[in-house]
Length: 205
Ligand code: C5P
Image 1 (cartoon, rainbow, N blue to C red):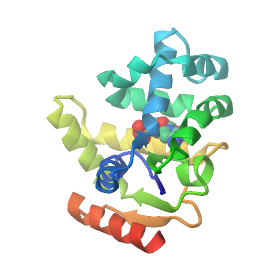
Image 2: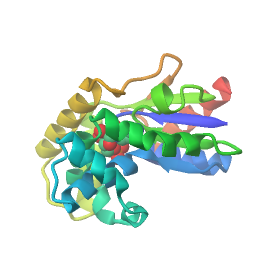
Image 3: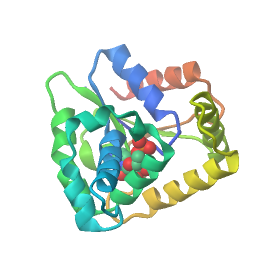
């Protein structure tokens, strides 16, 4: 069973994807992490994420980079969003994601274009979304817990910038696949969101 999970940043898709993978005993790939590694590697190379050839060169990041906590920062998320607009970068990361999706026994992948580009043949497609206010509140709490000093206004501005870039890009924009089941987590706790996702999976599969 392939489960494709897409949605904007801080929608809760990361937490949900991990829970769903654990529930079904499936391997899970957070594809955002690959783009974050590219964004980070561009900077380590002294390059510019807006430059297509600098971004493409950074696809050759070492696998250890995926474990670096710096990948979780807001700043790296923005770099990832800038590097991921380039079609050649997306093409270069395609096979790795596709192979993961097609492994024996199935997989859970989460990102922006899993249901539309990476696994259009997925058995179940979920689109996880939430209002900007709800997502910003969650991200703010997470940052406070990690001791990162950032205001709610800065987080809102960053989310809106990232949404606009991810939704507006020409290649593989963030959008729900036609056959995706949308879950709005604005007013749902983790347990309720998980229950809604399980129900959708059972209906679809
Ligand atoms: O999901 P996460 O916030 O870690 O993703 C970071 C950035 O990587 C996103 O803002 C998006 O621009 C890009 N991304 C993408 N396609 C994916 C996953 C992430 O373009 N499948």
